[in-house]
Amino acid sequence: MDNRLYDYSAMVDRAAVRWPGGARVAFYVGLNVEHYRIDRPSTSTFAGTAGLTPDPLNYGWRDYGPRVGIWRVAQSLDRHGIRASVLLNSDVAERYPRIIEAGRERDWVWLAHGKNNSVFQADMTRDEERAYLADVVGTIERATGRRPRGWMGPALTETFNTPELLAELGLDYVLDWTNDDQPYRLNVPGMLSVPYSVELNDISLFVGKSTSGPEFVRIVKDQLDQLYEDSADSGRVMALALHPFVIGQAFRHKYLDEALEYVANHEGVWLTTSDDIAEHYAGTGAGTGTGGTGAGRPVD
Image (cartoon, rainbow, N blue to C red; front, top):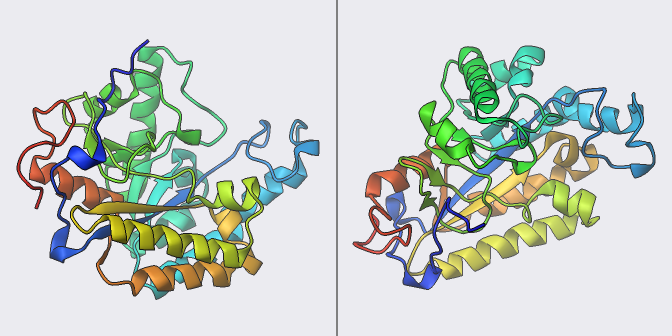
């Protein structure tokens, strides 16, 4: 079947995107704060025990995130004046309230990221998914005091109904479609896609490719330098996807700090959140009535 969610748009044919203050690259940290069920397999560092129940090796590795890793990551973000865009499982709000407290103190932005990272909604009926999404969004709103505006599915999963159902709940953007360096309008009224990355992502790099700490720093620098070069005529978005049980390991901490220091001190970078990127882009009217191509007046 054809993809009806969004239309093709060539980067070279779009109107220019302008970020606040003349910035060329909008940078945000997508901080995955997640809960994993102990009775289901999930992201693993050792495949040999991944199918066992319980699986202390892999479950414990993941559980390091909310217990220890998150606090190291928060230190680095604080040091460089970066507010996290938190991709939050609603189960976290109920099981790890200390993290919610810390995030509220820092004015972090909260995006809905499903109930937990062991349950996907991909096979749900429309009514089942509507109830599921309403529960996730409502739980996060009650815990954080702020209704989420953005969504990223666990493992970036959706159904064909997800964006429309999210729009019904008042959300206005998703991160699941990692196919661009700029936001764009979906063919669902009021809904945007905001860039996220499965490549500039600590799970893909450290777990999937065995990237070293110094290599990670080099990759972050290279990503920013190229996007900055690309943005001479039109702004770009750089998303750095982090998981506290991965990047929060002690031996990786200094490399995250080095990478963030480079970004925070780079000229022409707007240190922001996914919420603010979506709000700014939506406020420009970019892409309205153009089939998603972004043609029209420059975006200021």
